[in-house]
Image 1 (cartoon, rainbow, N blue to C red):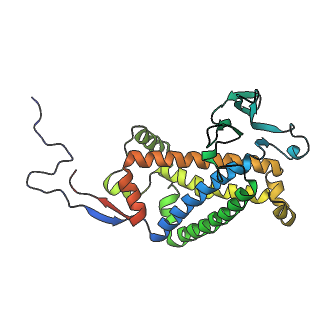
Image 2: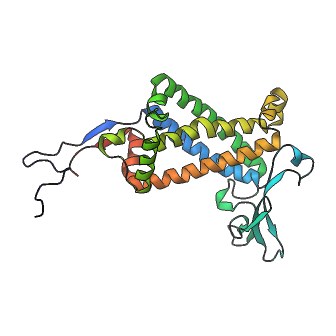
Image 3: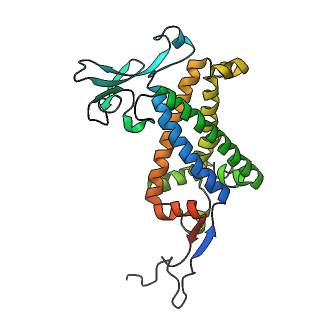
Length: 289
């Protein structure tokens, strides 16, 4: 005989569901630094791609400044015929056809554009190394000052330990696997559980804020001749200026990948609720389902 018992998440007859509560989820300084960080990173990515287009090759060591083929591991280029060129990406000895996106793309006027990245992905949208460098350096300082503000608040308030760094129990294999399965099934925390980050979120946020962003800052400094003269150890730290440029590019690509994944998960988990909480600081939990 089929059971007539109500589902476990249904209140007993005569008992009302608890009313929804508006809970403070994000401190105003967390929200301010979050949006400032997002703006700075997006503009740094776009200006950085414009700068990369001036020399679309990457090397290990310092060989690239002497012999442009020695130490080279990545290149974006185009092949003739120039009336109908083909774009390509070469990593090591492997070459991939990337026509229409990398190497050759369509300009804003609809003509073939022989450039590393398409115009819609760079800032400025055309070839303008001087402007791109000026904007890149400006927003780099925005990122640094904003990051120091976020880190200072996290240390003083305890948020860094409480919300960002995973606890020892969260790092257990069983807990990690459970969170991986929950994300794979697109099951996101509800109710009180939504008031704290799970282990995959913490690892991602800690990796970006405490590892990748400091890496792009330090490698960026290592690429500056003035900083190399003042602090020679910056260049040596990465094994040469060309290696620093390669690490800078890889860290940038990982940050871009994180941003893309972050946006997808926000859309899947309820964009109005999630974005609203990062604007107002408050999250609604509880209430009838």
